[in-house]
Length: 434
Image 1 (cartoon, one colour):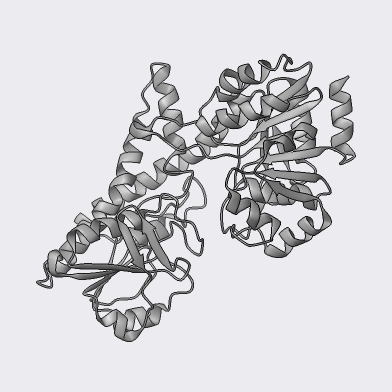
Image 2 (cartoon, helix red, strand yellow; image 1 turned 90 degrees about the vertical axis):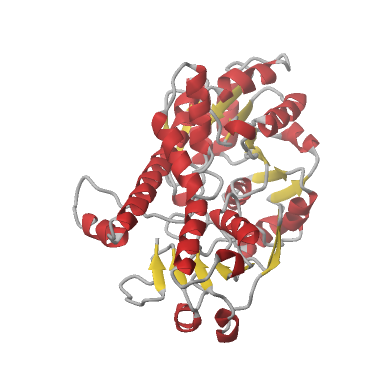
């Protein structure tokens, strides 16, 4: 029986694991499995990533270089650009990107490409797990038919499941192994096998009835955040019209011990998940004749925030009789999240781009990003000093990195537009809040 044999190999940690995609999701997963005693092969078409793993060069913040060195040196983790590493795999985990096409259509081409490679080497007694975020039905509607073209049958010869990634870059309270894992297989045996596998490296595993449920879990989590962030961003714009401090309102509302969860406004949403994942659900729902008004509206509000920040900056400058076309503006922070070296979908990039088109001079400063070469942006990070800050008519605080000297910034900046409430409780005529 393939099921019993494979489960025994997983329990004894003799199972060989392949992780396809060595990015923010795949590398932490591969390292944890290797630390847990499994032999792991990481596959990535990016030769630089593969060389970084082999040579223990850090490129993912949440994976300490000492951990990579240890598992690579022990031989438990290897990396390659070649898919023939799949031929000996007992379990394969797919962690490839799932971007959006134009008009917010899902692009699962990386998933399909990875699955086609797996099919070439698929054998009996093998578990295939998809972690890449996607729309409900991808596992059984897209992946299953491709794998069965091998001539092997799902549930009899191999096993297929979905388990949504829940990586939160920079979150020290909840590192990879402390975040509960949801798993859903095509068959009950597949669910049990993937649960058994992940229990070896993760504190808690929650089985659900199907891959579709597991796929939708991830989308619900991020849709919940998208909508609540969109709501509070809209309230922030509304409160500004009424001369109400939205940050004070949120703090006061947070004292209620039930029925309220605080979300905070900002210059937009970034990262891999929140801006994109709910649109996968929106797209799939439309194929079933249903339009999600909440997802569409929240996405529109959050997408508008960088433009709103630039517009408010223009108003702040105008009140000081400075035209935006003559102004020098400095954006503090380029990454989408505090203390995380990640530019994916960062609203700060859009703010910088808009300022380059409108302002007399636009620049940025970010201790984690020494230069930006992105679309129309080609800038070096400004070194912050009293002299440098005084050169700019306005400073926009877009990302609240811990490394910034906020006392220096406050003392020497002419105007500050604080989109992150860094200067909470400070009354200063030159500080403006979102």
